[in-house]
Image (cartoon, rainbow, N blue to C red; front, side, top):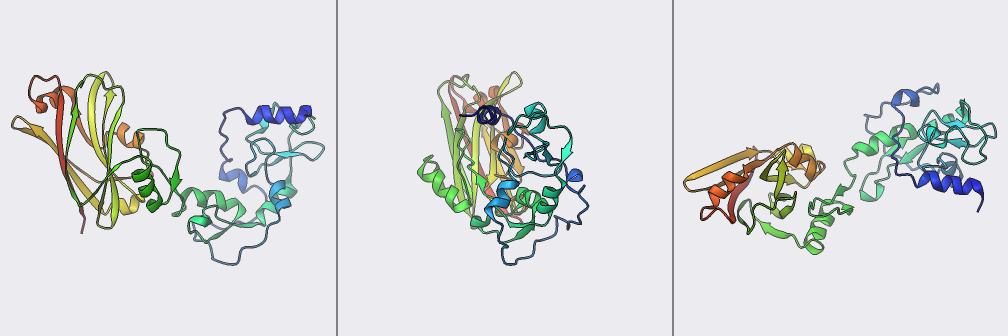
Length: 306
């Protein structure tokens, strides 16, 4: 294996995420590019040869390159994000890079129109090369991450696929209806090492909702939190509301809110405290008995706003 290939492998294996340059640099090529916020026209997909795609692929990170695209004196290119990673040495020939921009390749890229990478999920739009990345970050057809919080699951897919995945692979309890009554029991309530306890999926109003209940540390204090997530986008989630209630010994706590989209990670929702939060001492008080066993009954309902 050549030294250049060894060098490339070493760079690629570094766990570093490179973001595309800001849009200001992308526009600095003398081309008029339409507003990416506009809906792309649906038209026949122009053929883009594999050789052109390869020209626009950074040899280090293997991602598509965006302006400024750099090149060495021998014409080898790489993206601006990877340039500092190779210490100003061309990863292909090891010559010094300098500050040469490949304007010709930037103009070639500006002339391309490509389909959204989520085409197989239903997106039929065709987008200019420099607008494609922004569209894909907001595409309504982009897949969802698995909402299961008990493991680092990497499965992605549309909602029907994820519902089947949760049922078959994670063995999540599935319920029909918009009301629920759950009992959570733990023999040692002092063991709350950020452990996720339960995820339940509800089907109602033609949609799916995920009820999370878990224990975690809020600063130095152990607490419990329950919250609902909507299996869909945020704009659709806002059409629904839900309430949660927990109590015992003649007392009760009530939470009412709007379910968060599963576009927001479980951790993001939890760490924003957007749910019913119960301090451990209060949870043990609700549980009754000798306060050595947690016995919480959480009831709730989901409804659609008019």
